[in-house]
Image (cartoon, rainbow, N blue to C red; front, side, top):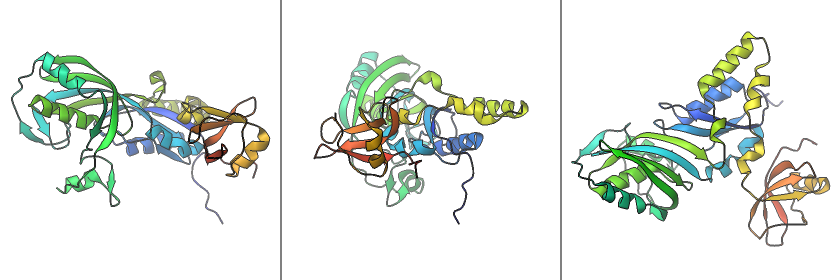
Length: 314
């Protein structure tokens, strides 16, 4: 007999304003308990030091969280010049102190060099895995693992402030970009060292900043609902964004209800209008454009499903 899962079977995405000092997984577990959700997952870790936008996926939306991992991100960061730490942020130990002799023109020229596509070597204090373990676990044991460089793109970087040996910037970057590594590299280019003292993620994909909520706000809503003796879900669930917001940037292919039956069973179909081969698409059904999953266009021009919503007809 199948074991019944604990919690409510809810679907959707919530934008949590992660607080500093706790991990992304701790944030996930707190929010999951507040919603009493059966299934939940986050869409890419933020450092404990960092705050800001952390999209959490519930239920069917967890199937599409990978697409948010692959999306662009926006950050605001403050770097302190003159000190380099072992983690490249203020949570680490200072390993080197140097004098700061930096002019604004020099700083701006160095910042400009990060724009565009470059190679970046991830920090040892990252969640990337090597032989099943996260790199930061090795780092804490004093073990250094060789890392391959990865292509990243800095779409924009703006210098907001430079005073008292602090540099404040806004960045728009591609997936897999480590802001701590950019700051550490900047410090080395300037010859004085640097580390992150403040980091806030202000954007993931095209999610609206104003839809973020804090854990404290969610807890207050839960407590108020209980005090008013109403079902908490009627209040909390109104904050959820639709499941397909995780893939809102993908081109849409609309199909008939008859074809949808085949797609939901994992079979490729021939759609009337499809993009080029290899294109990832968002699959919708009928005039209502009901979202049922994500697919790709194969070599025969067929719409082949990759991730689909649960088939409620079975």
